[in-house]
Amino acid sequence: MALSGVEIFKLLPKTNCKKCGHPTCLAFAMKLAQRQVSLDLCPDVSEEAKQKLGEASAPPIRPVSIGSGDRLIKMGEETVLFRHEKKFINPCAFAVEIKDTQSHEEIESITQEVIDSEIERVGQRLRIDAIFVSNASGDGAKLQEAVNIVLKKAPQVPLIIHTEDPTSAEGAAKIAKDNRPLLFGANEANAEAMAKVAKDLKIPLGVNAKGLEALSALTDKIKSLGVEDMVIDSGARTAKEILADNTCIRRAAIKKGIKALGYPIITFAQRSDAMLETMIASLGVAKYSSIVVLSSVQKWKSLVLFTLRQNIYTDPQVPMQVEQKIYKVGEPGQDAPLMITTNFSLTYFIVTGEIENSKVPARLAVMDSEGLSVLTAWAAGKFTASKIAAFIQESGIENEISNKELIIPGYVAILSGAIEDKLPGWKITVGPREANAIPTFLKTR
Ligand code: SF4
Image (cartoon, rainbow, N blue to C red; front, side):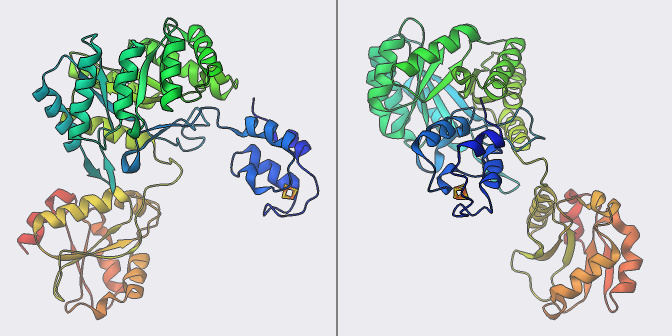
């Protein structure tokens, strides 16, 4: 169970020495209780207190990672039930299933689709994160062959190896162990042997049991066998079961401090109906899954899921925004058009993308509107004629351009006269309302 600030304070040295960077032990204790600082900052804490506080300050959902390097997948570490309380930390990963019964060519082709799934959206690289190789054949040699094909084509992509046979598990996981795969398939019947494989290879173990009671008993058992890093599956497969189990698991871990359920969750969304699969996967993204397994890579499906994941895992209290400045798109000369917009990330990336599409080099003045889009910023008084005029004057842009013309978004056409009054010598032109009209607008000027 999490300790309160006062309970933590009782375990600290109470000397108020300030070595931790806080004025008093109580102030430090309060920050510890909110998980905003690490206990390491206090050099004088006793071993006994360290042990007690270490357990209490550990995240209620254990951090577990798979893969390595740039594509490392971090899971767990969440501390809240709802994203308006605090930002969710580690975004849910998407894995695509490959069955070892598929042909060499099919396995290579799906692996290539995973590599090609990467897109950029609002400045972030988004992709299918992992490959889930399942031992559908029941043959250990076939599983190893499939793992080898994937590794040869995409050694950097994290792997989840699925088998319930400990001998097959050991053979396949050994091949991939340098890339820290997740070995999935431990259950009540094979727990000892699977735990031994995971422990010997120092890799995380995926644990499956039907229902939360059986699952927590199993994770306790596997922990006692020396495996700390686990990913859990309660056997939920329908939308109703996934919603109920995932919510109960997150509540149990965070509100009740039940360590046996404090692990990242894996959800299986595979369906023959792609629309239904996308809806089940979306439920997993919204409700606490750390890994969602899909049956295939399809661009439309990826776009839906990537966008949802990006929305869920951004900080709702901090709008996504870009730096206020004058951006160059292409290599604008002195007479290139100068446009202005707000610094909401989505607005910036969409407008920049459309200027690029026009093939007309231009400058884009991006004004700080605290991350609000054009109309919202205007309504909130953050994108006004005075503020626009002040920004343009302070930017010094008039020394870099030969014709003082500023193109404003069509949605704030109403501001054109007022901006002209406040920016003497400038011509204010009303641009398109929607960004997708920018290419035609710029090309026909
Ligand atoms: Fe208290 Fe430790 Fe901070 Fe010193 S370093 S003020 S003893 S918490």
